[in-house]
Amino acid sequence: MNRQQPPSRPLSTSARVHPSYLPYLHNASRNGMKSIKWVPPLVAVVGAGYGIASYREAQGSQRLAAAEQAEAERRRRNAALADAYGDRSSLEELERAIKVYEAQQRSDS
Image 1 (cartoon, rainbow, N blue to C red):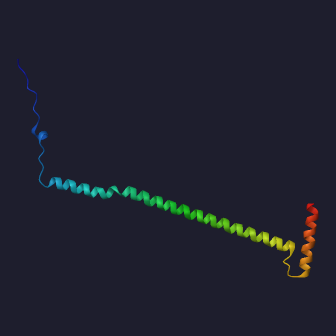
Image 2 (cartoon, rainbow, N blue to C red):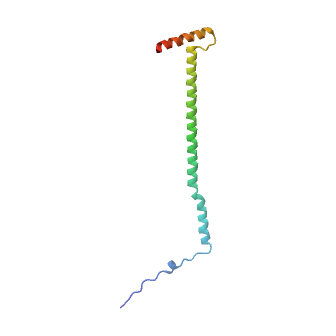
């Protein structure tokens, strides 16, 4: 009848004793971590803003290049029409333009 008693818990696990300043130091280190927590989202937002700005700038450049190309094409067509039909500054130019126009109308029909 030798009953063994269950082992009692050690005193160190039943009650923790801290110096009076330790909880304040623990909270102070957590407050410093709160500002670091915002760094990754901030970097992500700045990176996304930079990417969007770069994309819009590239699209603007492409749109400008396309507009310049369209303007050059329009000028080329206008110059070709002026060569074909004359600029109507003189009677000879106008007569030559009428002859070209009549020749085109006969070939189309």
